[in-house]
Every structure is written in structure tokens, then in C-alpha cells.
Length: 170
Image (cartoon, rainbow, N blue to C red):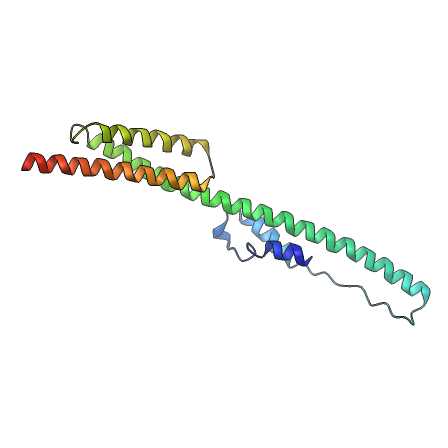
């Protein structure tokens, strides 16, 4: 039982807002805090029949502990998955917001950059980001990389627009 509780220690403190499905967190907390009581202690002066009954109670308690430990382990896995889903959904929302900005910039920067290479790079990053968002991926590392690549392409287009404006003004 202690091993199961240790296994859940990293997620038991999560709040509902930390996970996609608060019900899995509630279940973990309920199972984690479910009271298990030990049977009475067996003493050397107990009657044989009493000792036999206590042994049966301890055997049953052992099964309850094992069942409860398995529940806690399964609950902890579900909470981790729900957390990953929440983080993935949040990252996809950020990428989606950045996609809207990138598309608008692509429209606004037509014929305003020093060359078309930066706009083509932005188009490529938009397509990659959209494909990842559409896939429903929860791969946080990939979502962060796509978000960063998209921002770099946005910055490059903005810099090219500024460079062209400065060269035309100068």
C-alpha cells in the first residue's frame, strides 16, 4: 500500500484545474484516503479458534490492501494521462492562437517583404503547425517546438517588412 501511495505522491496534490478530467483526480483522492483498518492483533494466549478467525481476517485485509493499492496505481496513471491531455490541449490552444496571428501576418505582408522566402517559410510553419493541431497530439515537446518555429517565422516576416520599409524610406 505504501508503494502505491508513493507512486501517486507526485499527482495527489493536483487541483481540478491541473487536469482535463477532475473526476479522475477525485477518484484518486477518494481511493488514496479510503480508510483501511487492521484486524485485531492475535495474541499467544488466544484460543485456537480465535486465532484461526483472526488469521482469516488478516488474510481478507491483505486482499483489501492489495486491491486498494491496485486502485491507487490505476488512478495515478489516469491522473497523469489527464494532466498530459490538459497540457496538450493548452499547448494546442496557444499554437492555434499563434496560427491566427501568423495567417493575418501572411495576408498583411503580401508585397511588403524584402523577398518572398520569409513568407514561404511562414507558410510552411503554418502548415506544419496546423497539421499538428489537427492531429490532436498531446506531444508537448513537439507542440512547443512547433510554437517556437512559428514564432520565429513570424519574427522573420516582421523583420523583413521593417527592413523593406527602412530601405524604401532611406
